[in-house]
Amino acid sequence: MSQLFTPFTLRDLTLKNRTVVAPMCQYTARHGFINDWHFAHLARFGIGGFGLVFVEATAVSPEGRISYADAGLWSDEQIEPYRRIVDFLHSQGAAAGIQLAHAGRKASTPVPFRPNPTDAEKVATAYEDWQPIAPSAIIHSDRMPGFKVPREMTLDDIRRFKQSYIQSVHRAEKAGFDTIEIHAAHGYLLNQFLSPLANKRQDDYGGSLDNRMRLLLELTEDVRAAWPSGKPLFVRISASDNHPEGWSVEDSAVLAGKLKALGVDAIDVSSGGFDGAAFNPKALYQLPLSRQVREQAGIPTAAVGLITTAEEGEAIVASGDADLVALARQALDDPNWPLHAHHTLDKGEKPYADWPLQAGYAVRNKDRSLKERAFSVA
Ligand SMILES: Cc1cc2nc3c(=O)[nH]c(=O)nc-3n(C[C@H](O)[C@H](O)[C@H](O)COP(=O)(O)O)c2cc1C
Image (cartoon, rainbow, N blue to C red; front, side, top):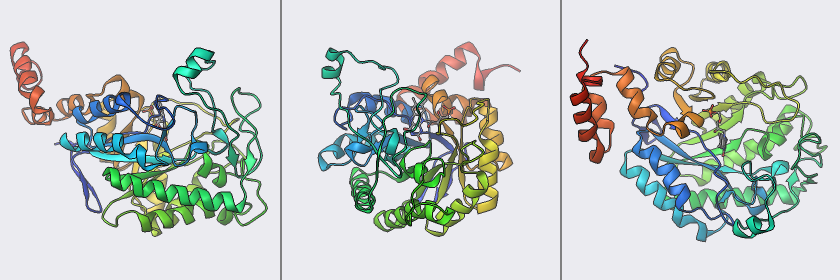
């Protein structure tokens, strides 16, 4: 019996297995409103057997979008399409999460697959452009195109950011989400406050480690108070900036301990997001960070980053590198990854029960005719 397909409980939420779809921006929203693309993109992961599916980085205010085409949850009118996705995921036995985000100085950038929109494309995709805000008025990169010099946030901006975040938390609850992930990774706003690479503030929100952690900790406390006590809270961090003058995994262990004390239930352990960082992605490259945060802070983690095979997923949970296994690109490549992985890890009839009713019996019949999986002759 595999570990990957055992349930996992956080507060009142029990996930049916340890497989998670990591948040993935689709850059397909208009004025923050998501649509049928987002439904289809996320629904297939419910059908595919994932235990928990995260909606992409969803902006808590218009200026917090990475691009004009990001998802948003800054108005009540935006709630309904999320509710439809949540209901469908629930119908498939999957839990639904949403990552709430603000891009800070990495806002108002081009869509990756439409770097130079024509005038016609701008009209068709509801193009918008604005000046980002950030802890300090420092551009993300001079080297890479598409970034802008941000305006340094005033204390009033910080207060407004926290307010919009909490309003989005209430909307996420109205949409029926089971969990929220606070996005504090990948060089976006909260990560900018944490990292000395982006935060040069002279006030209580900059300088020492405690000061740089202040905004995330204050926000977490507010989110925990606003979010139902039975529902778990995730925080995604970049556990290391991979930069000699940046945030380190030791800083992350300290931060994770404080987040745990504030009622955070799991840390989603990623890395990077700043220009000039060393980056050498290879299979399982972020696992050591997950293990270190999990061991030092004593908090459940989700591992992510070039995890592709069933055996890798199983080893991650069985060895204690992480409690949950999150996939992004591999899930795009194979939305039925958990269904397939369960057959690989646990032979016999049981994995067929994971398939949706409409498909399970038919796939089983196919396998029987071809003498595959449960019917393979040794
Ligand atoms: C298309 C795409 C969109 C992404 N959008 C987000 C996002 O909204 N929020 C986030 O934290 N990470 C985002 N990521 C990062 C993934 O969640 C994940 O951490 C990363 O791709 C590494 O996992 P993988 O090797 O399984 O793809 C995105 C990645 C991809 C490929």
